[in-house]
Length: 287
Image (cartoon, rainbow, N blue to C red; front, side, top):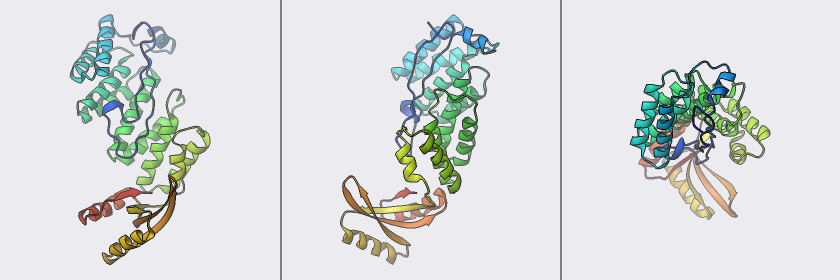
């Protein structure tokens, strides 16, 4: 059965926005379950908009098949026809969602953002609106627009129903964006919520590592040999960088990490990292 007659499919979508979204921060994925529900359910929910037409349903299926087969231009064309011919349909949030994913794969990032914004604001099925809002927030997060990302994630978390939404991943990205903005206390509250309310989350350990961090630093190297770390630190000190060496146990090894600075915001750390790269260092920004 199809979009206007019953469940049509369940489709996994990652936090990196399908196979084409970028994720400069981490490689953790969110699984979305997208379910096209029957028109009768929309009516029961008080929705007065129309389901997709039979032709719209056929085009939607064709677009999804093309998306799965990486035929993105064809998928975009099918989804666009569905939207153009079904302006009063309650199902358009789903269509905007998938066209947004498709347009990411076509490197049309701004158009994808527009589709997710339309899907999030359009009257229709609540969960589809939330998926669109999460996708839009993820793009803002990945693009470094952290103030906008925080606003969107906080709006999502205020929704009355978040069934089938990966709240742990939303919380994790919210916390990361808060840290980037220098809102360390807010980030601690967010990570604590993830840790305590989602103890089985695959993101729990990552949240625990970020919990109670108070600044960003630029890591310039990690050495098993302490003398190598001391030598690297000495060169940085000569170049007038504020250096520190910390010791950590990772994967059965003791590492001596050489880091530079304590920065309140990610932007400040990124500026220092850029200068260090120009000086020939390989660097990584860490909280």
